[in-house]
Image (cartoon, rainbow, N blue to C red; front, top):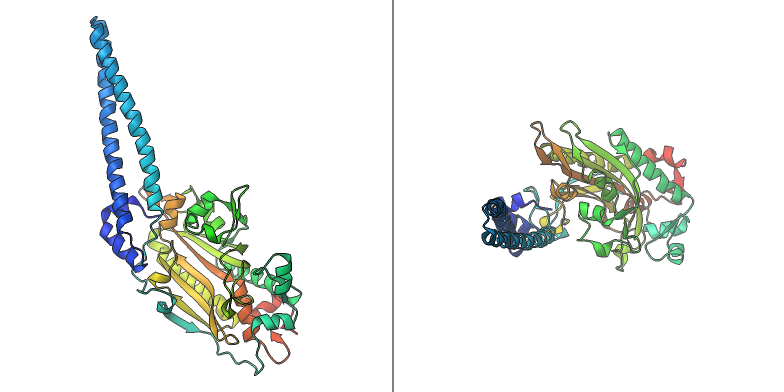
Length: 423
């Protein structure tokens, strides 16, 4: 959530920057400023009324002592009227504060200056490509056919048990899932991230804190009896560890990693681009989260991008890194780098990670602050990244490592799988 200070200092800058996200903020910004002006006017009038009440109350005592009962009663009536007006202002202040908050949460985060112009995915900037060229056998298959051929993922059984988008992993397919989760967690902890195991259901306050609510209700599974939400990503519970926390100047950086299953209702479309593991309602993902001082957050972002790239390189997969344009960014992000793997069997790129800096946007919603060296309270910066989302990693691993009669397991995973091929 943008701060009032940001809006008041340069409203035209806010409007101009949000236009890069193809968001017209002019009306909302004007409303916010008008509401804040009214807030200040209410406060000024309330302060003046309080002074008048104190003065009138003092006069009542003096009038009573002087035996001026009629004047004293008039002064009492004046105090009652002042108190009534004060109550009216208090109610208006509460209403105004709620309306102001409702307006502020409608504004996305400001994109940083590095974000390129653009309306959609076709305008994203490719900043790096890497990995080996993929050589497939002539009879190469997409991963959903490989999964059936080697009996490692059963999509039909998942439909029977739950519905589309809930696959059942079997045998070496299940072991490959577990191997990837453990491998990613081990690599993350080796890079200094502390492992945590958070809940996979969160309350509404947690969803608000990271920006999923009120923006993405339709994409989240909602347990209405308890008003809990299934996590769409471990970013939500892990970042909310720091909700309402005040850190010290020496408490940085905060680096956490977590594995959770993730749940998203958005996977409802049809066609080849959502077949198999390409898009699921439930999937496994390992996440990294950082909390940084503002002056260090972009160096931390570069470190996170480099770390995710090292994971992809160790898996031996062809990849590219994109800097998302303004029109393709999330509501909460100030800048995002996406990682995509090349699926030679499908002839398309598959997104497997987003690494983002939210600057102070989430921290403002979370009330995540720290005391600087001068003891002044400041908002921290939050960052997160997938490291990595499993479904499309598995899809690329199966497709790009298929040989005649078997699928080869990358060497870095073999200590985790206990096997070097699927056949």
